[in-house]
Length: 449
Image (tube, helix red, strand yellow):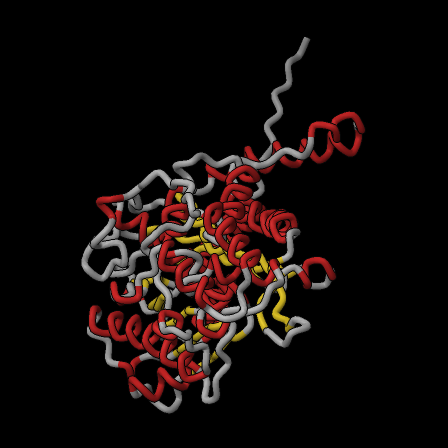
């Protein structure tokens, strides 16, 4: 037997081709990554109202009881809502609502929004020694106050922003408008290099008080409270070291094409001529549908491959084996993607529903529940109060990820994902500074007679 040893010759040209293609891909990747625009959250300020505007539950009911238009049944209904709302005795209402009789005029609404907007913007500018003329992008949002000139124009006039500032005013966008503002700022910062943006979120409570008898329109009276937030964003490399967070993703979902979703939160006028915002009983169900669609887009961006594979296998099994549908769909474990959750504190029922849907613990939704108890539903700024709470408790560490999740009329479900770039400091600019040592608290059922 003759053994023949054969050795395949190495094709030098093929080797060289593979080497140079690989090198080109590495260089291209480095170049693209270097060109990628990073959006940093330098800091944010949440509005803390003076104690003169605090409204304990007992005062709320006393004042409501002597206001014209509310009969005994209407009062009892609002009492029951407050008892189950998860709202405590330290929330705030604007001066116009404290007056007897209450002042819901346009002038009162303007006084409210100016107090909130000017306060948070001034604090943000002073804290970081920012010259207003260096602001490149300004975005404001408020659903019910659609004044002329706009709220953005008010800030430009008050602080003397330069004439070529890119300003945007979002109105009638609901409680999720705060994250919409962040998403818009992100897109603008990716186009306009070396820029800083200020996003300001608030709501006009004076403009939203309903004086009629329709129960679905009375709910906002009980849930919404005074508040606002100013957020400083930047794409400048010089701000990387001082920034608290880096924006990873924003995912915005709108299911307004469906009539039930469009009509579940809607401003309207009743038969007696009273205007208010109606919250349908289906709002929690609609929120769940919107969340499902939002998570379908967010999941592939944030979930580890193990969770994505399990989810895909569950879908395949449910399609090929009908009995598997009885179990219900597999819910990915988002706790493997996020360290903290800032769920919109729209009400106790909303927080509990999201907690159950995402299989979260009481600790995961503590920030949202305490925000609801301490500040109420402040609409588009609510999730910032929750993040403020996490910072005040010292829970946010470098490298951790936070999921801001908000819902709003339309119907919308919006998400923002942040990665902490340095451990946030705790100082007097934090809205929880004077109360954080008292929290968390056991949220009681308030007995009202």
